[in-house]
Amino acid sequence: MTRYSGSLLRRLTGAMFAALLLSAGGTAGALAVTATDRSPSPVDLPSELSGVPSLTVSSGKTDAYPGEEIPVTVTVRYPSDLIVRDIQYPQILHPGLSLRETGSPTPGTEDMGGSTWTTLKFSYLLSGNRPGRFILGATSLDCVLLLPAAGSSGFFDAPNSQRRQLKQDGFALTIAPFPLAGRPADFSGAVGDFRLAVAVRPTQLTAGDPVTVTSTISGPGALGTVLCPTMATDNRFRAYPPRSRRTERAVVCEQLLIPADGSVRALPPVAFTFFDSVQGAYRTVRRGPFPLRVTAAIKAAGVAPPPPSFSSVTGATLAHHDSAADRRTDLRGAIILVSGAALLTLLATLLRRFRRKATPSPVNGAGGTSIAEESSTETYLHELETGTAEPDSEQFHTAVFRLLQQCLGRNCSVAPQGITEAIIETHLRPGGCSDAVIAMVRTLFSDCNRARYGGALVSREGREAIYLRIKELQHRLETSPDVGA
Image (cartoon, rainbow, N blue to C red; front, side):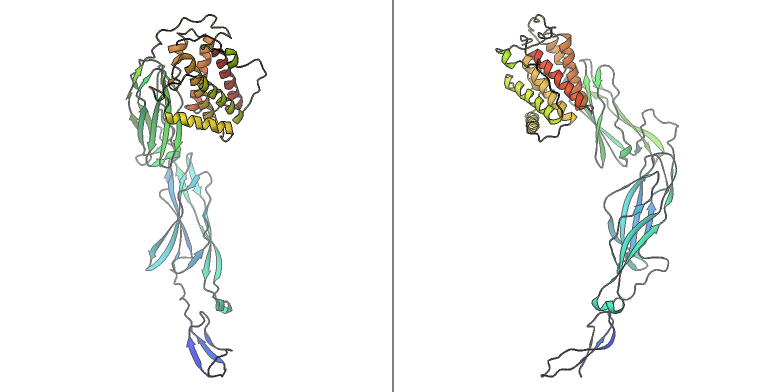
């Protein structure tokens, strides 16, 4: 009998006989096998730990102000020579508090008592919106621990899996009210240490043209508590509410202002107030004032005599056509109210009609629309006509605004790209337009500005009313002699 020894089978120890056929000179016999134990040694766990893996919850602080975000970290730890699988996200009870995850779990290692431990950290931001004492409840986490198998199953090297639920108690959080002493009137609840940058464009313009004020608020703090500052203006401006867009690092606010006359020399400062939770005090940052060069709207020279009966419904127009009957919009038929993409398609059709009839004019002139903008509008109108665009309020009013520019530009012999509401005083009123037409044009410009710059939402019925209004304006403009050419 021949004897072999070695670690042929892992975790199966002792002497045994295996019925194996050996080819050794044509003889066969039984093979005695001695298996030695080469499995890893048992894990030596620190006595102060009650379980493996362990779960801890830590916080940067336990007191805050409304809206202030506190970092919270949930950490899983286990010896690196253990195998842990299927680690789930923590379940954290947080009644009355807001909790949001920041980023992906972060793996790592730590040295504990001369041994290497594997860690997995989950990061959160915790906040409360009202003063009071709150409890961050217990945290639980599920995982699977793989242990060396024992007994006969070890022959197949199959590990023993154990599902574990780790638990850790929470902690108390106190939300203190903002101090009343020294609170500025414009404080809106922003908490952090913020910076303010302001840009104004354009700085040279004509009365009636828009100027955009862009304020960027950034810095460490709770950006979710930031509201856009509003520039305080007088009656020389028409001001629209600011619109905001948020990124991970900043809040960008845009406010549209329209100077009414050439007396404007500057825009007032922009101020933003926040509460610095580290200093425990209110702070206000200001930028400005911002110089402007506003040119008064110049009335058109050589204005033709006002046409007769301009105030009548059929005479309140500006343009003359060789064949008005071929181009006249028939309002006597039944008007079908449409919505969504169908309504926008009709607007696109009207706009293309005006463009076909308009005299070619230079692009990129003073205050004009760039070639890129014009191309973008063409692309959008094409999408409307093919039904691939998803209509919304801002896009709808952009199409209306372009249509209004084309309509007025053709009838006033002005490049449409530069037309704003100022055309009322430079061409329409000197040309003898009726108050009804002027009111209609002013209303259309106001509707467009409120939606495009003020973020106003307009219902389907509102869009239908605007569509009918611009069709009526088109009808009036097509049935009168030229004015202001």
